[in-house]
Length: 175
Length: 126
Image (cartoon, rainbow over all chains, first blue to last red; front, side, top):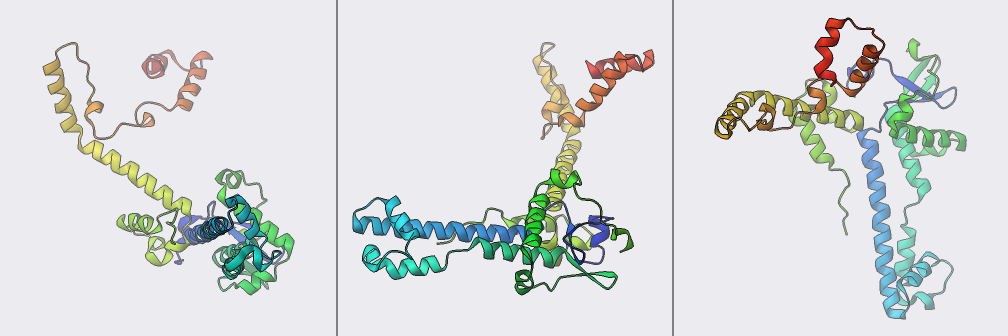
């Protein structure tokens, strides 16, 4: 962001404190980069589902079973033997290995939220966490992750943010 | 297999860039970190301003159109200048908003306004 951005967007920025050392800046909206990462994740999930359905149809045709049954078989591919999936076992295993996990997708979002909005208290000054990495996200505790997830939802829902359900940060005025 | 993105980010960016907004936050390098709400608000408001500007520039033509229509249609035909404008005028562009009307009705009912003001507002509130 440019040096003027803060003045233009919000003259007095608001923050969501996660603990004594970490906070996230509120914009009352997702940022473009965050929104398109989420869209990208949704696309990957949708693409995975389409591929799985496609494979299930192939298997159903070969085995002479219902599509739904084949799809269920695919979902349990870790528990069934090669005979059931036939020649598609390798394809099914590869597909399942590439299944986007909710956990990793949430971590990606958390990382980008910290890069764009995060601040950490260093001494008495809040410093931006624009070099936040996936490894840093993995170090976060579950309560903090839950708070970030709730923050994401609040930032999406304009009404929730406008109501100002969080108390203003005491340190805001100082920085 | 490629799925189409839900939001056309390139188009959004092009729309924003076409506005030539002077603030550096609207430069290409900052686009990714702009709040989506700000982008959509800017584009919506710009579209609204464009419509108002186009309407304003078309008033003379619209007036002539209404005159011609009145002349051709005779006394029975009632045409408004607004009917000849390119874009419909939004309700809040002319007259008072519903909330203001409600407040004024309350003021009238409780006799908080002088008679002369009531007379001036009568047509607006009816």
